[in-house]
Image (cartoon, rainbow, N blue to C red; front, top):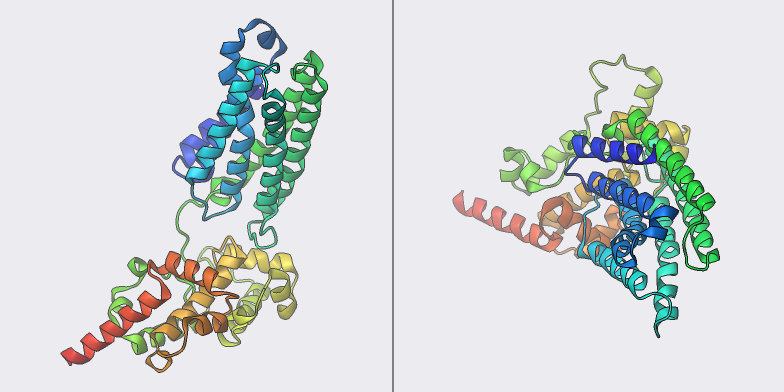
Length: 382
């Protein structure tokens, strides 16, 4: 049952979102768990030659790294695979395979086996930290609940299996513990599969770039309308200001809810006119308190009405718009970039530079230089 469920999950992920990092990590952990379940059966451990067990052990221990990567990819919409992920898995796999082949009698066995036993605990902690990170900023309610489940069950499973293997003289599971191992994994995978099918991949994994409301549009230059891209600083600022005044429309297939319309108007006024995004450490709870609405309603509104999956990304879109307008303003040409970043709501220059380049493809200084060059060229042509 467990092998069939793992294969089903891998097939669903491969079918629906094969190119997304979260789906790829999910497929990897599902296949890795299949190898782990087969390789840890007492009969196979007793009869299979040690050299043949080494690859199975390497994959099984490496699953701790895959779980950590999967949690990061699932809960971070901007996650990308990095060489450190492959390096971590490779080091753990080589270490565990070496221990399996050489055995516990070589000179450095206390060190190598100690490191191998620390791997599951270390990456369970890292996975829990990744799942808990920005939990309050997550606007997808189903994904927020899944975070808690993964943190609790993932860490609990790791600790139980670690204790079971440490209690065994050769680190092998007894028949009873092997059955408990399968039952625990089956429970966890059944819940994940149920949530995946219930939520749909459109909630766990974005189907495509969601349309952003006016004023929250992506700042990438290739996504800008030609008229805005070619316009000068004044025209750009005017166009942005005109867009900020428009309230987002409800979906065409829904009847407007008066309470939602009041919330939309109040949120629009607070963010566009009062510029609440300039407040340092602005949270969903703080914004909900200012709007005098329950936090869950504000989360649902920003997620389902405005199309945002993360509160920090929602707020940073306003801050980047603000900073971009200031950088394009000739009257603020002498103002330091740091001052502009701080006034827009960023707490330091580092995160601002990274967010600005990710959104526009250039640094703030390069953006200001390009705007100045376009303005000079426009004046020369006129």
